[in-house]
Image 1 (cartoon, rainbow, N blue to C red):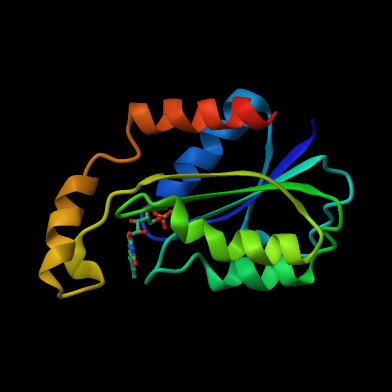
Image 2: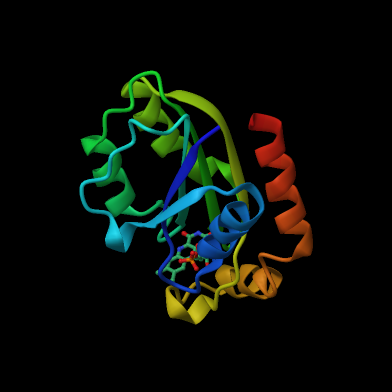
Length: 152
Ligand SMILES: Cc1cc2nc3c(=O)[nH]c(=O)nc-3n(C[C@H](O)[C@H](O)[C@H](O)COP(=O)(O)O)c2cc1C
């Protein structure tokens, strides 16, 4: 399966680490959204979209790019890293992909480290910030691999 991953990872490269593991172990091609010009997805059997979560959303740039792509009948998946590591954050992008006729093969999420004071003064985030330290860790990478194997 010829696979492309397009990702946005600006804060701590947490999402990029997962994308790079996929590239190294499975030969996927990677495009950092920063360098995404004239993306042509027609050659690929599977396209993954990865992003960090910023204020409860995946990257708006990724949404914009997805809007512009021809994804009819394309196999796709979404992955994200976030302070809490919830798959729920992927839902909105999955809905957009499906509305464009893409076939959702699955979704993966894990924690990515952050420092609460970088984006919020809410106390609750201090707790999540502490719990996120060291992520993505070895277990996250193993789970990411398990996920990929299940959809290839
Ligand atoms: C501005 C900002 C907003 C964030 N908002 C959330 C959030 O709403 N929920 C959450 O779980 N994590 C949040 N985080 C934590 C990031 O999702 C987490 O660190 C992620 O791994 C960053 O991915 P990246 O290093 O690939 O950019 C936020 C981080 C930043 C810097």
